[in-house]
Image (tube, rainbow, N blue to C red; front, side, top):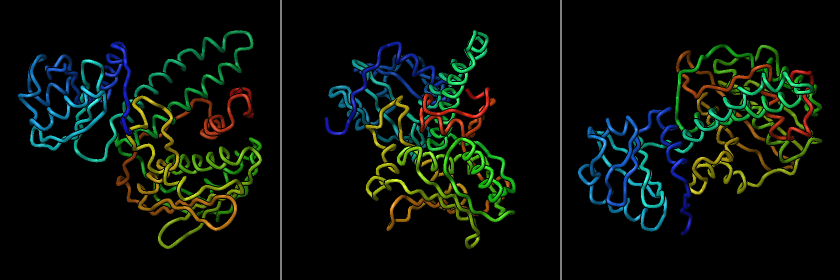
Length: 357
């Protein structure tokens, strides 16, 4: 079916998706092959100003209805656009056997599946965290509880990446960030974990921005160095004043990445075959790039030598100007612990301190 993806979801799965969409107030409907609406979210009802049982043919153009029927017939995912309540909407079409799930979004570069996946991951993390106190109370349960907590925080981290890239924006608190102090503190924590890293940054290298997002972007890129270069990779983290902003450089002596591989990582998560409700989106590079964009800068790679060098160019943003998804928070577990546990695996990674297993 070319690059289209078949979806095989049970009715329980369908109900779970609808409940998840309610969390994010998404406009969505489930329709039969005859385009009669069988189920809808609250926002779906507002969008059409109709009752619980009506025909989409009364609201959508013949072209949109033909595309929906085609997707049902061939079991293919599709999309179309329609102007509803005076706003152009992108309609994502997900065939589910003899029925179809339609997701309605404003026609801009937003990815509903990312937000659905984020909601699922946050729910999973909540379930995991609810078990921690019971597990810790068991004899020898601290190590198991630490691994459960780490996995939950990894899910929350991934959900935050989904929300930032999917467009679920909330105002972030901008403040004066000491990038030099951030670099040296991060280097010290990583060295305590056994990672070989050199840091170079002047003290008092200030930038107006979101320190948590910058920290998360840098750690994500360092994680890539470890993921592809292994535990013995040598990393160099540098920060310096550049023009009207700050330049952060992450260098490693690993195998490096080709321009083609980087392009795939930068854009692969946008493709339809990335999969609905699939947690493995490969969003590290696009997440870090989005953080740079939010700070008026960009992410880019340098070529021409062994290893890999990635640069984050950041500029000052005005207080209250920056919008970002909520960054993940940890409970007795640092962002470094979460990132390293993802890269090295729970068995290979040994965090310092009893609370982190």
